[in-house]
Structures are given as structure tokens and as C-alpha cells.
Length: 525
Image (cartoon, rainbow, N blue to C red):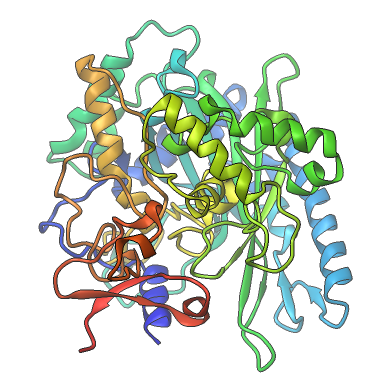
């Protein structure tokens, strides 16, 4: 029951317990003001101005025009191919279950017709600064993400939000659909002459701006503002995440929702968005079917240098080991954090062939710690497996997400877009903001930068008490590890996953039978 309650709170966008009134952990690192996003979408950073600047006009880009762009043709084809593969797999795995569009089917498929419709478009739902990603491409100072949410519109030529006279009335059904499209931009374009320190400074200066709405949007876009240099020339790739199918709860099964993740890099020579591997999304089946490639991968990852990067959360696995699409189901077993729970160890979730043997992991950890020093996160085979899951796209999206999303964004078309009880992002997103802000400050001040991160389940504190007592760290609803009285009986990777005073770590649902991972709740006795 507690799990159902907590999951409902997450889906509805619960309040931020423990944070001071008016404080938001994403301040200085993200744009989440609904009316500022409205102004930016309609007048400055709408999808039409980013993906079709040569033909940009004042009319937002409805989906029939979006997917008619030559640059988007490979995106449409790749999504069509993924749908065909998904349906074929579903029919092979569950021949008794029907799958299609609409509630008459056992599994309800995403309606692909909305991708070509003049009555839908992608609406700007948030902007996120990811200067903490500068370790991937230091020359670009990290990334900036424009996040768009697929939304139904009544008139493609006049897709204005709810009329002012209707705001404040009882909420109506949101026109938003379960799909996001992220434009990932280089924080510093290849030809832009600006320092990483200046970019970080521009973002951090927005922390205390007493502005909202159009005034905030104007300041962000003005000379010296953080969005001034974010132009179509900075685009690196597009990322899509859509709810490909949903199976409602029935007498025979619990509900299940599958999310399809894809990435498309921009090719300046062809001027096309081309299908590309997902970052760190290991192609397990291909590695197992090609023993030579599998051995090459395990040797690469267990090398002390790369194992150290895995521990820090900064590993970048070569494309030859990765796949170009992933389906992330939700919910997943609470004790597991990733799509492929048998990555690391034999046994566990059923007799799936492992990529790594436990003895090999133990030996590699010892070699690496002897050479590289003590590890912060991976101190056991279970820690290795959990980390290997949460550095993948699918594993990350399954950890403390809102359904299959980490940033659903704000809905400025809603009847009450400034409703303070709605949060734009997941607990995982908010829990990581202290680390991201620390990195931005180090970049601004020219200090050495520590790009490491904790597990997706438990954020690094980075010397701050800002998250103490909240669901993001050790408060009610935080992820935790059930400790045993003897230290030797506790996994070294998770010994610090405790609960605040007055709370106890309790296992959730069926996961409690096989895992000591749980959530912090008020002590029952």
C-alpha cells in the first residue's frame, strides 16, 4: 500500500518535503517557469526556430510540418521500424494478448497517427543546463537541453494556451501526450568564442532573479543571458522518449508501461538527424551472441582505468558495444535499477547468462583499487551491477522516474499553469541538482572540477545539507538499504544508505523477498 501511495505521489508531482518555502533545487540550472516557457516557445526557442530556421515563421511547427522536413525523415523511419519490431516481439512473446491503438486491446499501442497530425505539436516544457556533462566533450563546456512535450492543439495556426479568463478554474484534462523530444545543444558552439567559466556564470546569475513570465524570458535571451548563444548551430542531437505501449492492470497481471528511447545525431554533411547508439546502452544480446566481441567488452570495462570511470559515473562506453534503441518497462522490481538486471551476475533474476562472472568482478575491483585507490560507489559485485545498470539510458529512466520520464516538464497550456503543487521533474532529477550546481560553481571559479556522481538512487551530498531529510536523500520516501547489526553482513556498496532519525528502511512489495533495498518510512514500532 505504501508503494502504491508513493508511486501515486510521484506521478502527480508531489511537493518538495524539507526544502525551504520558495526554494527550488534546480534554481540557476533550469528554466521551469511556465509563462516564461510560453514566451520562449512562441517567440524565441520554439521547435520551428530550432529545427527549421530557414523557413521559420510565427506559426509553431505542428507535427505534419515537422516530419515533412527532410532532416526529420530518418527519425520518422527509425520510429516506424521500432514500432514494427516491438509489435512483432509482443505477438511472439504474448500470443494470447492483442495489441493495438485504443482501450479495446489488451496492450494499448501509442497512436503513431499523432506524429503526422496537424493537431499535435511539441511544446517547450523546460530548459536544463547540463554543464556537469562537460567531461564528455570538454571543448563544448557541457550541454543545454531544450525539452519539448507532445501536445494536442485545437488549431495548428493558433496554438495558444488556455484563455486567461479560464485560468484558476477547476483543472481540465491535460492535452499533453506521453512523448518528449529533447534537443541537445553544445553549451559552447564549435565557432563560439566564450569561456566555459562565462557560460557557467551566466546560468548561475539566474539563481536569484526576481522575475517570471515574459520578463524572465527576455532576460534569459538578452545579451549576456544564458540563452543568448543557444542557436540551431549548437545542435548536437535529438533524443526521443515515448510511451510505446501500456497494459492496464487486470485480474491476470499488474499494469505495465513500456517506453521507447532513441537518439539521432545531426550530420552537418547530409543535414539529416541520423539514428545513433544510446549512450552506455549496452547491447547485451549482441555481446552474448558474438563471443569475441563480448570478451572484448568485458576486458575493456574491467580495465582499471575504465572501472574507475564506471565507479565515478563518468564512463563513456565505445559505440561498438552499444545499441540504437531501448525499451524501458515500468514499474520494475524495486530492488533492481535497470532494464537488464543480469548484466553483471549469474543467478538473481532467473538464469539469464551473465556478461560478467562474479569472481572476475571481485578480482577486477581489487586490481583497480590497488592501482587507482579506494572506490566511492562500487565496493562489491552488487554495486558493480547496480552501477552498470544506472549508467545506461534505460536503467537511468527506470530509477526514481515519473513513469518513464525524468523531466516531463511544465504544462503552460494547463488551466492553472502556475500550480505550485506540480513539479516538472523526477526525484532523481531534483536529487542531482546540488552536484550539478557544485560543478557549475567550480567551472565558473576556475577550480578543479569533480564530475563524479553517486548512484541514481542516492545522490551525492557534496558537502551540502540542502537535501537532508528529504525524499532525495534520507527522508520519508528515500531509497535505502536495510542494515544488519553486524557490519560484515552489510554490502559495502550500500552501507551509507540509511534513513533519518525516526524513520526506518522497509522493503517494498515483492522485492522485499529477494532484496534489502527499500524506502524510508516512519517506524512502525
